[in-house]
Image 1 (spheres, rainbow, N blue to C red):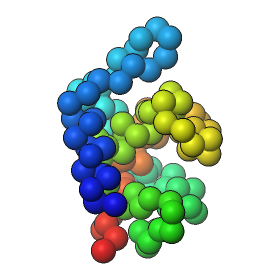
Image 2 (cartoon, rainbow, N blue to C red; image 1 turned 120 degrees about the vertical axis):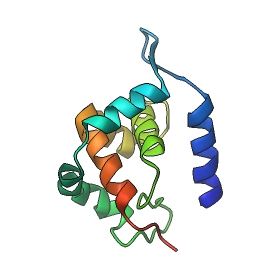
Image 3 (cartoon, helix red, strand yellow; image 1 turned 120 degrees about the horizontal axis):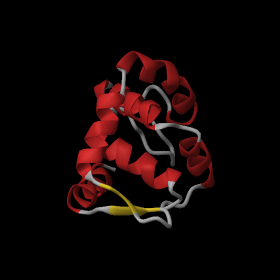
Image 4 (cartoon, one colour; image 1 turned 180 degrees about the vertical axis):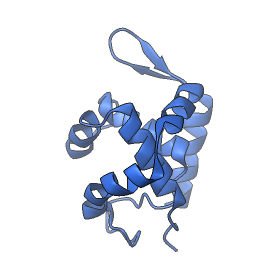
Length: 117
């Protein structure tokens, strides 16, 4: 799991993603802007829905843990799901309902939690 998160982090650090037919480019600096919009307390409030599947304890059986995830990686993943660049109908639907402030808030909140051991 740690290897997968490391690979995702590396890919998001050196790549740009094309989102939509208008070729809207999401860069690392834009991810930082999204994170800057966030509020940890708002993320905690929103995070209860995430914890239903990803589990607050960080334990997971097939569903990846998001506790302790790097905020930039979290934002990049949710933006990819929202743009339907990653295959998972449930995550596409959930990410599609979130605005940038909500994504930033969730990223900040989950990055503060203790990762599973």
